[in-house]
Amino acid sequence: MLSAIIIDDETKGRVALRQKLQDYCPTVEILGEAADGEEGIKLIETLKPQILFLDIEMPRMDGFEMLRRIDHKDYHIVFTTAYDQYAIKAIKFAAFDYLLKPVDIDELKQAVEKINQQTNNITPKKLETLEHNLQSIHSLNKLAIPTLDGYLFFDISHIVHLEAQSNYTAIYFTDYPKLIASRTLKDFEDLLPPEIFFRPHHSHIINLNFIKRYIKGDGGQIEMQNGNFVTVARRKKEEFLKTIGH
Image 1 (cartoon, rainbow, N blue to C red):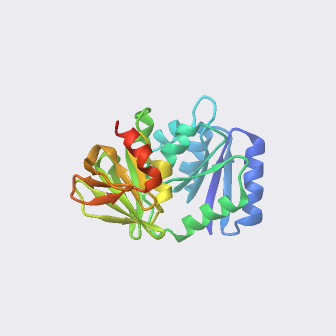
Image 2 (cartoon, rainbow, N blue to C red):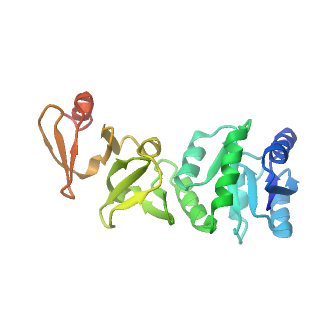
Image 3 (cartoon, rainbow, N blue to C red):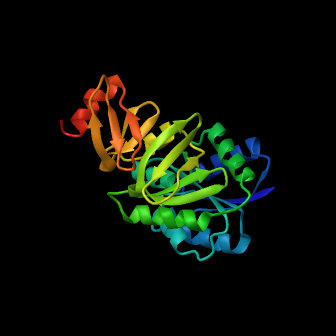
């Protein structure tokens, strides 16, 4: 069994989540609930749960501020939120799970199952990444990359380009060996900032800052600064040339 607590200032939110956990997640035991950050801190320190279902938007002390006040973070966190697109993106960059309210049952089950399958807890490192990105409000740049062995954390400015490999993605860096991430290229496209990263082909995403030259052709080819070549799809040629100012 996985022990859990729910922290949410809305009573109906806590009741709904508790009921869904009881009905659809039999491996989760709810130890308690809190209606604000102060009460949540006390519950965490007293009950020491394995999972924290944490609402982001709470009066006086939001979920992020509550986490900053806790020294020991040896539990899994699933954020819950009704809005705040920036916070959601920061959460995804740090590889945390989040649930949009009203909570979808399938997404809840997937989040719990993911926790069930994890052999180690790297919450402190993920929170460090999250905190960095929340402070850099106009620029998310620390990314948690899932691999078969766990997570690695990188500054996105060190990514030269990405290449689809079925349901995985090969990532090429300026200062690190090629990495195979257990996430699709579409997942990275949704995360990475479009003003820096461009998808010229269904199999490739490039960092515009590392283009060495463009070779004309039907669609053409891009030579990256690491010496690799990326094909430009014919349908993407005009958009690409406009993006680089030609």
